[in-house]
Length: 205
Image (cartoon, rainbow, N blue to C red; front, side, top):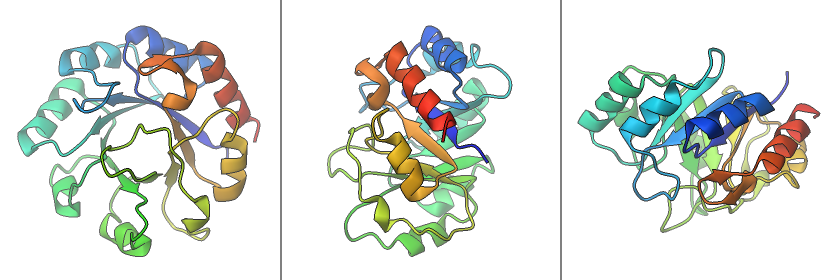
């Protein structure tokens, strides 16, 4: 089965159309003020309107409160929420809404325990750990830490670029790859040539 591509950190409708024309399977909208790619709810609703049927709309949240998560679900109407902070399994599942759980790969992480806790998630996303940032760092982690035998859909994130994504797919065999900074000319601005090259290389694997 072909590896899917998620382009995260989309900040405008124009970028959404560009990514879809290039072949993206999912688009990520970041509603988290700590990110240089943050959009507010009004902008997210606008971008949502440019996402075509068959392309997943994912809203990334970090340690948002319950009311805010419910507001995002009801107003933006994403296909999935990506919980990318310190949210507990109970917090994530209380909304009875499809979600992606991001697991940040700190050195002392018990990976099996994390996987078991979020077994009801639609996808598990593995990203690099940074003490002062929740994703979007452009750093990769040791892919050898990921289990090769698994019974859940895996999204690989963290420091992916057109130059290393084929190596990443060969090493991990993910179901989806997630890129943001690796296809940008500057934070929040996607570069068309990098974007197309990244997706072309993924689809050729």
